[in-house]
Image 1 (tube, helix red, strand yellow):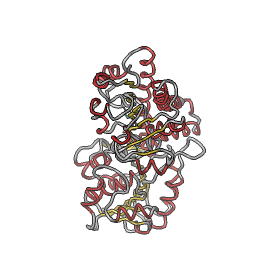
Image 2 (tube, rainbow, N blue to C red):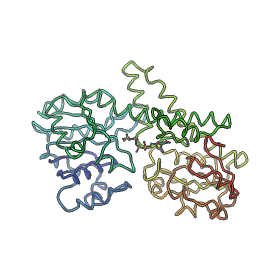
Image 3 (tube, rainbow, N blue to C red):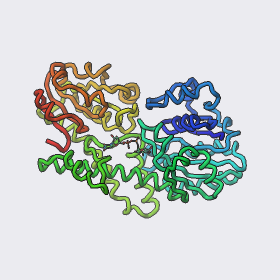
Image 4 (tube, rainbow, N blue to C red):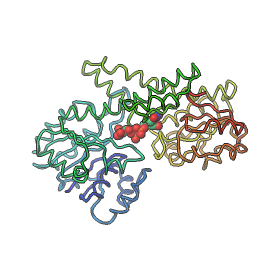
Length: 431
Ligand code: UGA
């Protein structure tokens, strides 16, 4: 099939490359010339494991092309909208500017029989409001939310754990079945539904994940007060299959371009719909989450005797999670910036996210390696659980720092081993 993908960010670029690798002819479109130039040369414009290989595989084959001109979508039959829906600058709601612009730019190139497929995360009701404009061209709209995780985006796109089609006709469903024929043939669970359900599935899933994380972080707060151990607590409740152990890792909390802004937009939308009370709890989820970042800063202050001013602190991690260079709403970057704001001499290191962090936070000092970050540090703060940090040998690095103080903001280190090597160790919710 001939497909276009409008928006070549973390979602769209992976979707375009994955669809091409499944045998479709794909044109990826974005207004960002630099991004399109990189993709057209077969280079990934951001860090995503597996994406460079997919781009190399299809490069030069004609199967996957990129353009800044939306007219390149004209001879495609299915058009994916994969642009961002960031938080509004002046409020908690979603900014739909890019979705509207993408649809407006596509309208003149649509023809009867085309299918426009929304993948962006949008407030419920968006598809209903976009449909008339698309239907006026003889094309049709479907909403097909995406559940990929950064770091696993390629696998999640090629082998999704479920497919959700929000459609108004059998024809739209059949076209989507053709697009996803490989996953459909593999027996991937499929939910065929209406627009509002498809939109809500996505925001509900992210709200649930955020709630799970904040729940365990609330337990961490209680564990700290009572001397309990939140990791053991998570293990013990996680054995209950109804609860499950995944997304119960306490620490510095959730970040990224999705969970934080999605729960805020979801709550804002509920209020617009007159159902604010239904999602009022998401404000607590957000607040618990933001408290975790503050807790790491407070722990560093306490362990350094009451002030971080002019104290050298190694911050390990800047990305919102490992295997990503994404620093959007990153707890790790927030901790680094917060400590720096208190006058600490922060030296930060991340295997992939430094370039992005430097652009947004030029005031921080960046190291070229973990070793350089640790040199003469009076405290080490681990805030993104990259393997490289998890595997640090407490004995081997003990002589690199000036004071053996470690704050394990992700509860991933072997506490006993670090203590045995002479470190003062503090995790979150585990003393
Ligand atoms: C999330 C969802 O997991 C995807 O299903 C969804 O498609 C995506 O948002 C999206 O809406 O596009 P992602 O933002 O890539 O994916 O990140 P997650 O793996 O969900 O992690 C989110 C944050 O939660 C990270 O900061 C991570 O460190 C944190 N986290 C995760 C915890 O603090 N504890 C945990 O136990 C798990």
